[in-house]
Image (cartoon, rainbow, N blue to C red):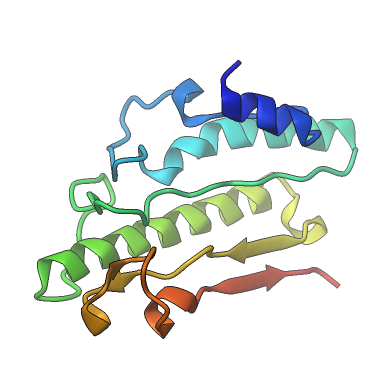
Length: 158
C-alpha cells in the first residue's frame, strides 16, 4: 500500500481507487497528473450498484484532475471548442468543458441507477486559476479573484 492509501485508510475510508489502478485504455492524458476524469465512471458505476444493493448510506468522493496544469484537453473523444484566441486560455477552457462533461456524465449515472433523488451532491473547487491576469499564472501565487473564486454547487433533494 502506498503512502496515500495508508492516509485514506487511517481516515476511516473502506475503499480507495487511485488513478494507478484504473483501466485507462481509451482515455487521454489531460495533464501532468493523469487522465480525463471519465476514467472514473466505470468503477463508480460498479461501486454505486453495490452500495445501492446494500441499502446502506454511503459517501463517495471524486477528485477531478482535468483542470490542472498543463491543460492537454484538446485531443479527447469529446472534441475541441474554440473559446479564445489565446492558446493557453483556450486549452484551459477546454479542460473546464471536459470537467463539465464528466460532471454531467456522473450525474446521469446517479439518475440511471435511481440514486439521484436520494443523494446530496456537493460540487466544489479547491482553487481558481491565474492565466496571466495581474501577471500571475497557475494558482499557487495569486490572491486575486481568478485564484480565489471557486464554484460551489449543491443538489439536496427535499
